[in-house]
Image 1 (tube, rainbow, N blue to C red):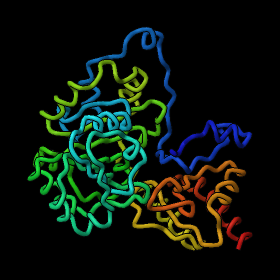
Image 2: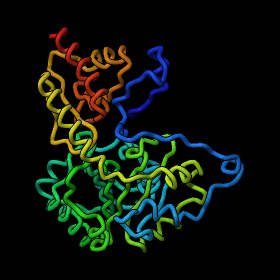
Image 3: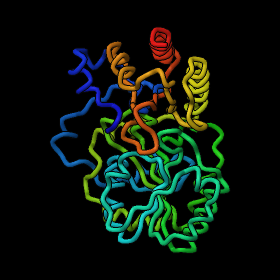
Image 4: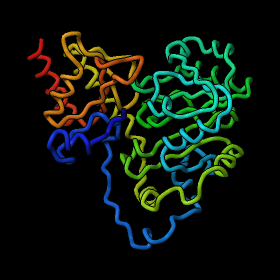
Length: 341
């Protein structure tokens, strides 16, 4: 399962795509997607293969361009990278469904986020080639304690193991505690993945980038296919990428509003969300499937977490949006809760 399936939703609920209020996919709602016009030459020719200037745009002042490899979305890279691993893989759970679906030659070992966050030293007991950590995690939006993260990197480096940190939603975290550039310089066993589709709200263009030390980036790029980024995505980032520093503060304001509003209505917030999504548990008197159907009748999509082993149909994840949209969701939940006690 995955959020954002607006096409089936529109058909099943006899509505238009433009009429859907999608809280199921965690896109940035604080940025306006701009129109994009493709000239004929961009369609009838192969896309550009020299990505140097686009690396500089994505690197900004945070990384050097030789620390970056551009890929057509983080999901295909995860599947490809996971498939190249021969040894055991540690996955910090809960985690995006893509990690569970990806094939690997080794054994997958799941370690709960809370356990590893409290005691990263347990990694000394495991033999693993790669560890995957989503930061902030999915679906609760929590971030690993910085001291625990450093311990994970230290232990993994001594084992000659790689740590892959999925930072798809890092732009929504206010007051970030780690400096990724310092980590890249100190730890040669780290790979960071960042999805641009979330923060730029362009999932249809499929764009992400990988960050690591230059030697590893060279190896990664040698294994990537040519013409991998379509010209529309390249054109968009060359003219529409803007300063994203304000996104985290705006997200934090609306996240606090949603958390307070949901808690006031009897919904139990899970963990300490730091991203642009919130997971909450329903009261015992509310059935998750019935609530989802009720909201669908009002053209509101939410993500029910029945495919997560750690959660179930009484857990729902929602995207943090602008206030006008958040109010619509809260009012719908209030009416449902008020009439189904």
